[in-house]
Image (cartoon, rainbow, N blue to C red; front, side, top):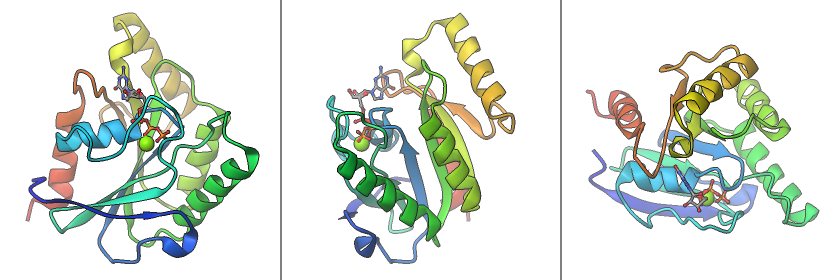
Length: 196
Ligand SMILES: Nc1nc2c(ncn2[C@@H]2O[C@H](COP(=O)(O)OP(=O)(O)OP(=O)(O)O)[C@@H](O)[C@H]2O)c(=O)[nH]1
Ligand SMILES: [Mg+2]
């Protein structure tokens, strides 16, 4: 597992989307929520997927080919207030076009910051995943920032917001600092791509 990691390409426009027919696992969510960090933590690499303390770092759809079997896809974060409206619209259009034409997407991880309640943009993304019939798992991220009672509260809040969520099934938790949740993601990918 994770023996061969290869950066495939970045797509800045709908025309540049990768057309190779390998299954895709996508990571989406608000800017700065920790998508690229999660990919690095998962793969045990420091700087494979680009991260930054400046939100809006990932400006393209980035494809990583894993073990020549499947792709991890890092989507640009949406909702960063400081980018221009034109730029934000460009990203939104790219992500929407990608999701709507997602022939190879098998699963989406939608990351949400465990400290905050889901925003309108999260609802929009959730609706888009449902409309595109993409199976999704919500990941409450950065849980290293919470104490026990805040953690319990965050879990309760997200399930109230998205009642379809079942903790341990389509609701997982993660921290790139403590690596909590990494084992669960590994076992999921293991079942999907390495079990035969
Ligand atoms: N405490 C904590 N910080 C994290 C965690 N994951 C990411 N961060 C920090 O959050 C910031 C953003 O992380 P990125 O991985 O670049 O976020 P992103 O979702 O890829 O952001 P965009 O590319 O802008 O969409 C960085 O400063 C990370 O160090 C986590 O699990 N815990
Ligand atoms: Mg990123």
